[in-house]
Amino acid sequence: MRGVFDIKAVDLRSDTLTLPSGEMREAMASALVGDDVYGEDPTVIRLQEEAAALVGKEDAIFVPSGTMGNQLAILAHTERGDEVLADSQAHIYYYEVGAPAMWAGVSIRPLDGLLAGGGLDVLRNALRPADIHFPATRLVCLENTFNRGSGTVMFPDEMKDIYHFAGSKGLKVHLDGARLFNAAVFLGKDVREFTANCDSVMFCLSKGLGAPVGSMLAGDSGFIARARKYRKALGGGMRQAGVLAAAGLVALKNINRLEEDHRHARVLAKGLSALPVFEIELDRVQTNIVVARVAGGIPASGLVRMLGEKGVKCSAFGPDLVRFVTHLNVGPEDVEYTLKAAGELSVNTPG
Image (cartoon, rainbow, N blue to C red; front, side, top):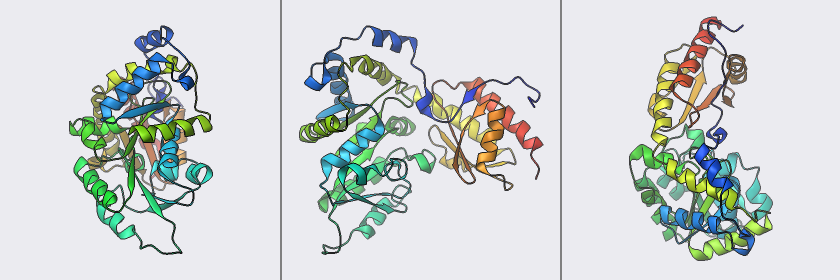
């Protein structure tokens, strides 16, 4: 049934669902282009230069997706048979199809709690002595913001401690910064305070920043040269990619507006937490991700289906967890509608 209000479409599944703005479409239509595999696309070159400067690295490369950016980093930092350390809930381990084993021939050892506070102790306790039975540990992967951690932020000081300890052990640190600018905006800090504490960093243009396609991978010039060759090997040479890079340049103007998404997420979280069907740790709603536990024994998949019937799309994040993500195409009226739909669902749900 429709309930007491008209059904509309509110899509809170992910911030990858953002639509390009008019300004972005105009920039794409008028972009100067060349063959990027030959290094001749002027718009891609400009985007790479701006991205590298923004995160305080020597060089950067434009890639089709965040997953490719992360995998290029692993390929460029490791040799076959090496071991990579990552949180057991990290995107690189949880959501990237086992790609490190597939492409780089490395194993990922998942560590509980690396991204949940106290990461330095987790890392210190995870390191093993040299032994013929163990692979060589080569790389530590961090993630900021932490997707499966409700979009929470790892503070630069904690990253610094991990980075310096890793370096003292001969390990490189790669930062999956898919939503890194959300972290910077949340703390009111320059993004370079985060990126100073890693050897390489990937960030997405196609999430909260609003571009339709693309991510950036940044590091020193030697690292990017290796990553560029691996990008070609994986089919990431996109030729006249300036059409897409132009959207990325406009997206970089959207960093400060991420606070709007954070504000909408806080309003949504407070409203949902007042309903009996949801349990939310409000202090973990720091950026644009709200993870709610479903109460009353209702499966998350069932609740997602019921909300979908009311025009609100969200994602099951586990057997009893639901994820809502705010973004630039979600306004206050969408948050209000979602709360109305959830409130009606809560009234009509047994228990």
